[in-house]
Length: 291
Image (cartoon, rainbow, N blue to C red; front, side):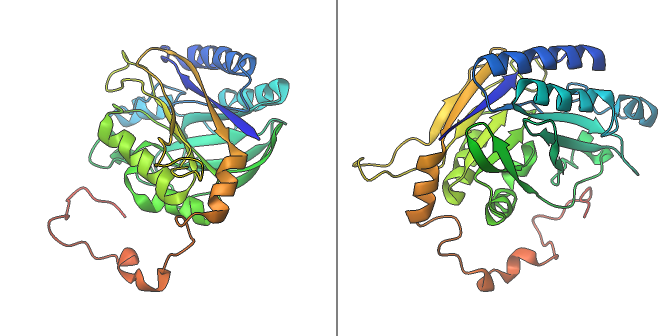
């Protein structure tokens, strides 16, 4: 079973209407390329803009039932292809950074709001999500357990770990930041230690504070027929705008997960009490931290 995830590394337009039209065109291209899932970069609805002014911020939000969002559900059904669309969600008391996954029948099967908001920056004006979710996604190739995290979530091993513990085989990651060697290494690490596929979609170079380099890692480091470990990176785009197709060999990933030592095979959670301690000690105390 080969699962094909299209990374829509595309430049946003100047309005919600522009982004709807461009997003639809990119999804159609993804389907022509044979994709089972199309993934947008972070907050595609406004091209990742989070104004400081409260009124300006509110004007950019859309509800989860807005035609901008539901149009991608209808498109998913039309194309027989899952679509993970991202948007600045209208929410109280503050907006959320949200991704909704529609399956190929147009059903909304997963809604995830970014848990690890960047509170040291513009995302201090957003409401953080409160959990991670996994869904059984029906694809033309067969069922796949899919989860999601967003950008900065990548920097916390707990994000991908929880998704793995909930059964995720592939994790979708909308993104909006420079993807340099260390951030790519984090994604490589999350895939390796959890034996999951990770597909990350970023904005192209030319979008402020972004540089493309959307990527996919399958997490399969060792194969019996190979004398050494293999490169788990199955795709890394350049900086150019485009639709890039990552192919995950789900049969290989599943067999690997049945036999290798990572993931949840040899963990000792009874010894991890410190991971859920709420106390924050120096040198990690930050005045802008929010629970």
